[in-house]
Length: 341
Image (cartoon, rainbow, N blue to C red; front, side, top):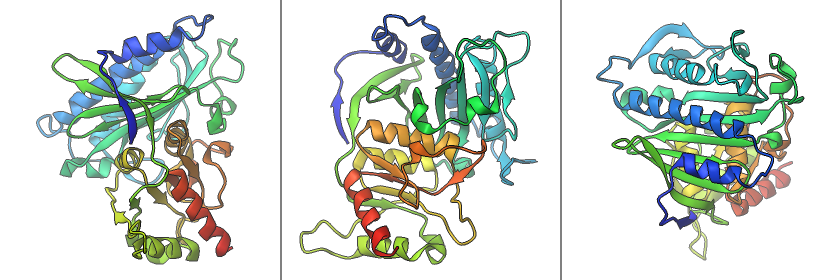
């Protein structure tokens, strides 16, 4: 990861306030909304660290809209974000992986001009074994920002290129927040002794090519011919020593994406015979990841080679195939797709 390792002591609140100064007409509403969101992320980070002590590991008896058994900490994280964001007057509607329908802002509260979509706890199947998990989010502006009414499905189902901010947290050996509002990608690290996110890397740039590939090879027999051929190609030694690539796969999308952003290479979640539309959710996983990756100089496409950020969602839980990473690696993948088309 090509970065500027900052020597300044900058909290995320100060960073967001400084970004606000770029826009002379800014009202501070967006800044206040992000302050509420970072508070929710701090609380989730605390609960993740204390999960075993608080007896909140393990499954509930519920399944979510995707038919997946819900972890207790999934529900807790979902509720934390809702309660932090529902009353600030900044949002008109929310959408979450854990809710089948849109999440309305309660009637006593003002409806704002922003929309929040989020995955409260990505990789939650890894909670019990202490593997890195995370929260993913994206922010949009409603179609008519002058309205003070409830947000609609049309407001939420906007293509990813209309995101005005996106980010994710990694809850691992440290809590890291990766964030962009369209002015490059910045990385913050949480200091629990002070209770603040501090800027640690500025304007992250992914290498043109990497040395790692990340994919669930347990599904290899279900993949298309072109993806199989590309994976086999990455394993073959090359005369210049660039290949073979090393395989890295955690199983938490947020962890696999973060490693790819840092070291380069490619993270793949292809479609399969039993999941022809892929697995990752477009709205609150693939879109925020793609916005961040493009801001860092990388690329993100689906299995047909279409830019993820150009895809128009048709439902809040729509799935997509997903290929993201260094531009040189994505371009090489596309050449395999063309060869086998």
